[in-house]
Amino acid sequence: MKLSKWHGLGNDYLLLERADLTAPLTEESVRRICDYHFGVGSDGILEVISADGDRAEVVIWNPDGSTAELSGNGTRIAARWLARRGGSDEVRIVVGPREVAATMRGGREVEQEMGAVEVGQPETISVEGEGVELTPVSVGNPHAVIRRDPERAELLRLGPLVETHERFPERTNVQLVRVDGAHDIAVGVWERGAGETLSSGTSAVAASAAAVANGWCESPVEVHLAGGDLRVELRDGEARLTGPAEEICTVELSEEFAL
Image 1 (spheres, rainbow, N blue to C red):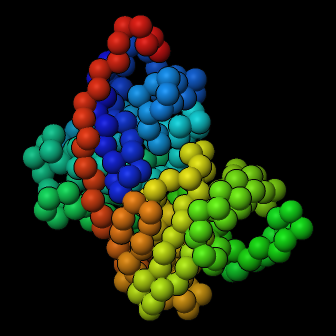
Image 2: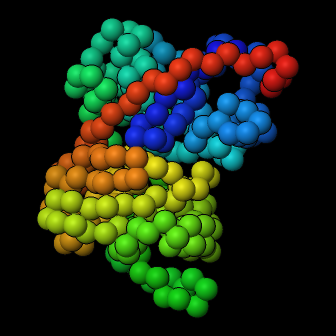
């Protein structure tokens, strides 16, 4: 079975087509493939269910074997793959009930219409006896945005505690945000089902939406992540996300690596 490996600012995914599978993907097989020591290694798998012209339906798998409602980097990668496959600069990627329209902007850059973003009121939860203020945001998937310096040690400490907090029965993505200017934020990402990641598209959208809603920033927002920068534009409750997607290599699983 062949897979292509891609990344969006260091957030790497394996892309495959369901038609090429010898057996259906399962939680166990996804965990094995995504393992960096015993498998190919990735932050997740993009399983293309169908692709017809300028439209493709995709299932996004997390490396722990769970599935994600949406991924900004994942849909951007799938969009570049589909654009190259079909020869169109404008494509649509369907993930569950959400359809993301994407436009190729030259080179590796992809502009995406991410759809509706819902920002809740700030609230405080107790984490190991500490009061942590967060802003809940939905970008089709859940986020907890915390205004705090995104030092790695603090991200690794706080991320898993908030992800699995009882406030979020389905778990949540977590962002630590430092405001660097009227249009600039630095963000550390703890991704649900994946842990620390260098970049996350929906996290960039969620952090930007919370920053604008709370008066920390104004749109457009330049989001500075460990893996590089993304641009988020917010208007009338919807978000546009722009950033790169790049193919790394093509991989063929050996017969010994049975699914």
